[in-house]
Image 1 (cartoon, one colour):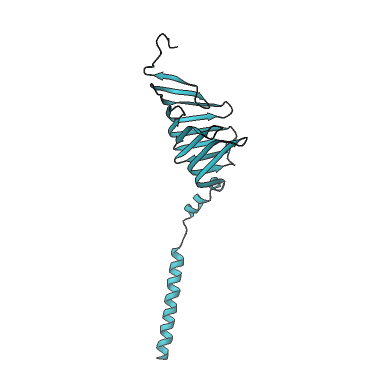
Image 2 (image 1 turned 180 degrees about the horizontal axis):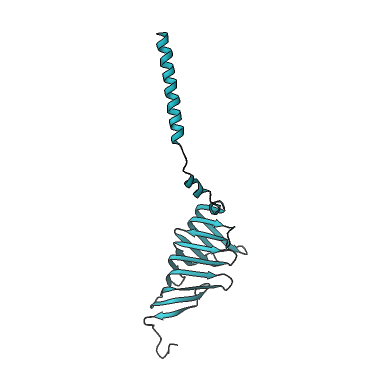
Length: 193
C-alpha cells in the first residue's frame, strides 16, 4: 500500500506538472499583435473615451465640445487632435445661451495651423433655426471663416438652397454658396446678382 501511495503521488505530481507546462506553452502572444500595439504612432497618441471640453475666453464660456472618441498626437509632422463618433459642439453667447450647434461623425484639429476639419454627416443648426448640411466643413481660425468645396444644403425659414462649395463667417450670419443650384427666392423688384 505504501508503494502504491508513493506511485500515485508521483503520477499526480507528474500530471500537475504536465498540465502546467501545457498551459504555459499555450499562452503565447502573437508578435504581430504586440507590434501593432507598440508602434511609434500608438505610443505617441493620447486616447480617451467619452470626452467633453469647455472653451472659454475672458471667463466666458464660448463653446462646449462632446465626443465619444478622442485621440491626440502631438509629435507628428502635423500635430493633430481627432474627436470622433458623435461629435457635438455647442457655441455659446456671453449670456450662456446656446446659439449654434455643430454635429458630425469625425473631426481633426491641426494645432499648429489652427485648422479644424469636420466630415461625415456635418450639420449646423443656428439660433435662427437655419440648417447647413454637408459632407465636409473646414474652419480656419486665423481667417475666422468656414468653407467647403463639397455639396451643401442650407435650409432657412423660407427656402432650401443647394450648391457646391460655400464660405461663411464664424457665426453664420453671413454665407455665400459658391456654385448655387436650383431656384432662389427674391423679393419683388429685386434683381439677383
